[in-house]
Length: 246
Image 1 (cartoon, rainbow, N blue to C red):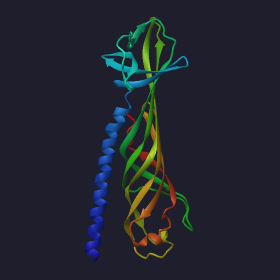
Image 2 (image 1 turned 90 degrees about the vertical axis):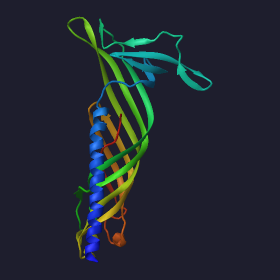
Image 3 (image 1 turned 135 degrees about the horizontal axis):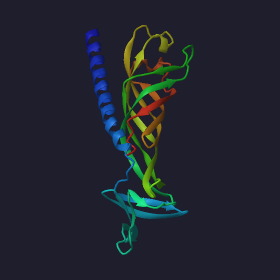
Image 4 (image 1 turned 180 degrees about the vertical axis):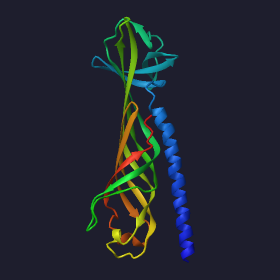
């Protein structure tokens, strides 16, 4: 019987480890994509001089081609009758005006929470836990690209694009937690790795290459000892990794 439980726990831990590794590896490629400052082709909201309008950005080599848009039968299309605006990578002279392009979207992603700060409960002080976990995230994302030109001593200006991203949403997933007499108020006399269901809210903020995420969540132990676990349904703060802001 004990061998069966140990084998089951080993299988569960292995599955969680594989899932977390996949999420972390995926996150590395996600962060590489998110670190790109260049805009992608698509529809954006352009803001400059307190004006706001919908445009379509077409990237051809190093040039950003900004096309005006119009609505036809409630559908947004490119207005080819108007002249497009081109922002080259380098131009002669100075360009004083700052332009920003915003894009909102719905996010569906996977991420992991490597660190959880649990507030003190009963006689146990606050703890910083590192456990295997993986979660599905659903939320709304806003990306903002700020374009300007920086003049150099040769009388030319180089294009510079800074990216700011923010996403907020909800997550749900599975993880594990170490069960012991300490976190069960000395009721449990054995030690094992329990499975928890995690859920909560997360917010992600990005500035160019720097990305950070915070999560506020709650855990529920998925076995018979959930009524003696001191962290059952208690809030925690966590560091989130792997959210795609691209």
